[in-house]
Length: 405
Image (cartoon, rainbow, N blue to C red; front, side, top):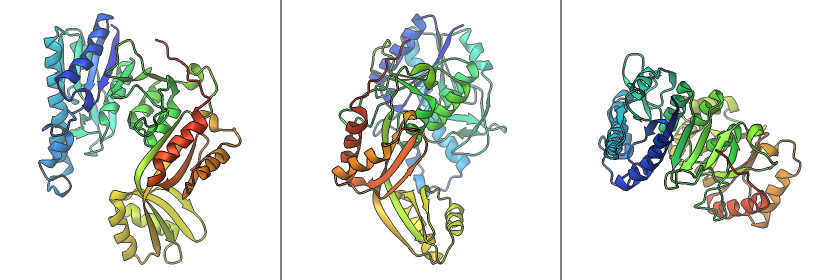
């Protein structure tokens, strides 16, 4: 039997009209003689009582007395509700459907509650159900550990659920959201941003790791390892509009482009810590012992420079002060990543970035590069201007290939 996995995010299942749009894609696939495994997130809508945030608010979230295991019990309910409601809506359309939890769908994880890693997937029950129905709706974001305890996969984990189920079933996967596909930049900040019709796994992974919010980075890694055919699509589009095709870049991109996309991360704080009192190793060990994961690291003979999310600012300052570290902080920063497989071996890319930002009087606070990505840290108030200027510089002349079915 022909099977496809379709994942719908919280905004695609937030209310009856949104679910009706999502079901158009499910119904279209069934009409094409495909069986459909639907993975759903929790309902995401301001004030919705069953969203992940609303469920956490029931127990005071950051001040809760619940263990991580108990928190997983709580938040997993959101996807269970979403899956059963979606299955009911499918039946009302005349589709044959059933709903399964992550555990019932065969997703086995470790016991790292709140951020579990998938150990294996046994799709036996899904395949058995698809002999009886056309649509199996699976609660995303969750699984069970070897003792049967409910676990969750971390924020955005429904993308991971969809990818691992597609890998286990050896079938294509479509990730639906509220944007047309993978964009050349955030369309809310860059009006000229446009959809990338074809992209390689590595480029997409870099965009996702650096702030693109359309898909979870772990889902891309799963798709790459399993060589899945993946599409990033918009729920509101017609079923024959295919969004962005993701697969091996050398097999799908018929042209040469230097930069594929520009993405950003906001609300960062830059720390500069002198090393006369503490060595670089001691500084990083101290932060790691407090559960602080640093990013964008520069080390020289006299200081280390790194970034943390602003939510970690007070904890980092408290512990560095207690350790008698000599440090300074710069708040309200943003990181911009320029991503493209064509960056490797192409001279002049860094010069173009520096000159483009200089023309806008934007100061570069930090920089780093790899063979496919160049990062710069700037002040957040300059972010919109920087993104638009860099998009004009690198995307103006590019033509993006058209994906085919």
